[in-house]
Image 1 (tube, helix red, strand yellow):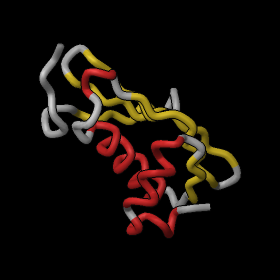
Image 2 (spheres, one colour):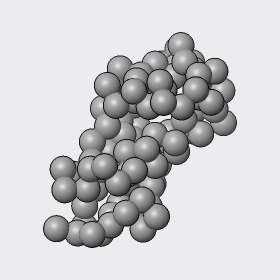
Image 3 (spheres, one colour):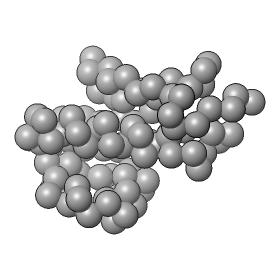
Image 4 (tube, one colour):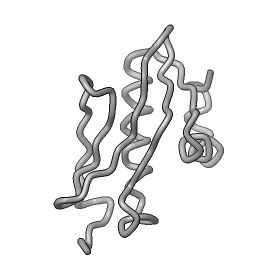
Length: 97
């Protein structure tokens, strides 16, 4: 088991695969999306089980929402984690479809 926290992990935007990848040692987390009709549809967020509850999914979600804001995209959260993130972070509510 790797002992990484949010600060040690890096988030990379893999635009070709339409996903944000969180690199924590040899572990990888994913936030997957599709862009259509001016919307970023976030449909899956995943962090390895042994790295959960360390803010890693939030790091990817912040990066994804910053990208959406820069690209002037609205966000449709189909992923339960992303939907919950919006409820906890009203500062992003302007991005919701």
